Image (tube, rainbow, N blue to C red):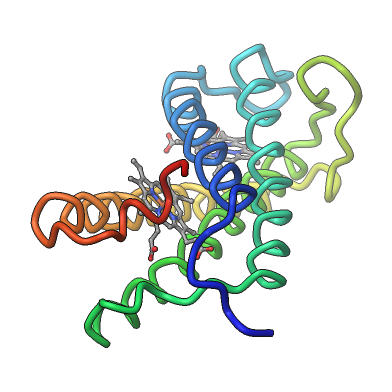
Amino acid sequence: MLPRLHYGTTAKIFHWLIVALLVVQYPIGWLMPDIHRGQQPGVGMILHISFGISILILIVLRLAWRLSHPVAPESTLPPWQRLSSELMHWMLYFLVLATTLTGWLFASFRGWSVSYFYLFPLPMLASDNAAAGKAIDGLHQAAEWTLLVFIVFHVVAAFAHMFIYRDRVMQRMLPG
Ligand code: HEM
Ligand code: HEM
């Protein structure tokens, strides 16, 4: 399939919807109270898990959309910027998947039963397992911080294109 030259409306909606959910998700993650073994999750954790599962569903749909609707890098970019932006974008997809899946596994190993926004019970991936939970907790934290570092680089690059290079890269992801 020939790559398109521009992102379509669907790709833009996926991009900005996931950005908005991540802006909510990080503060909830940092502010929600710690839950000790044997305790059931409170409102903060239920919201964190529900937003997290929403991000997971959206990133899987977005990835499927991206694979079936390839978009060429901006043609005016030098080769090193084309390559580094492609690499950065695939890493962002991978890291969102890694963060959401490690979070879901962690909640599963805690043996919790959690509802999606208090609407219906969420399926869990595994049963109660303290040792596995400890290991995966470290992975969720590593994934969430690595994702944040990549997001910072990505956003700095986007603004560098807007204000320093003054090219059309930022325009590609904006409405219109
Ligand atoms: C991209 C999406 C996600 C982000 C950015 C994120 C971010 C975070 C953050 C910042 C924390 C606080 C940990 C710390 O103090 O460093 C956290 C904890 C946690 N997250 Fe996520 N999370 C995401 C998705 C999920 C999902 C999908 C689930 C479960 C289905 C989940 C379950 C948890 C749990 C159970 C904790 C508590 C860990 C603990 O008590 O040590 N997260 N997350
Ligand atoms: C203020 C925040 C952000 C701005 C200004 C921004 C800007 C952009 C721009 C301009 C592009 C198009 C780049 C190009 O044409 O080569 C893009 C693509 C992309 N952005 Fe962001 N972004 C932001 C936040 C995020 C966040 C938080 C994520 C995390 C998941 C993300 C993930 C991606 C991905 C995966 C692509 C590549 C899309 C594809 O090719 O499928 N962005 N972004």
